[in-house]
Length: 138
Image 1 (tube, rainbow, N blue to C red):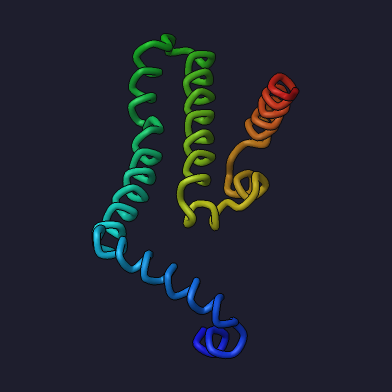
Image 2 (cartoon, rainbow, N blue to C red):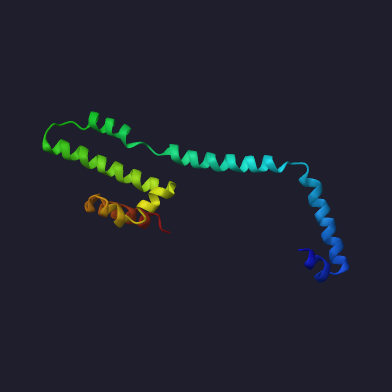
């Protein structure tokens, strides 16, 4: 920077640069850098925490499903199990967008299938995503 200032800039450009530097320096003392850094860190953490707390936990949904989906027969059991599979899949998909560790564990939908999720559930998700994309495309 000094070499550029001394060798490349003309006398008029040097004077303009010095005035701009003095102007910036005058206002830099009004707001301390620690305040700006603290404000930035607080904003970043609040955004992350808001994302983390905004998605529902599957165990709360499980209690609602088990209380409202009646039947002790095979059909009721399969319906409850299918609903919870969808809930677990949606939790994994949400966590993939928030957590880098989960995204590294499941970088693609195929990795979720390989981890034990049912292929039928993933195909339903792809179909749903395609319908949403087609519906909202302009």
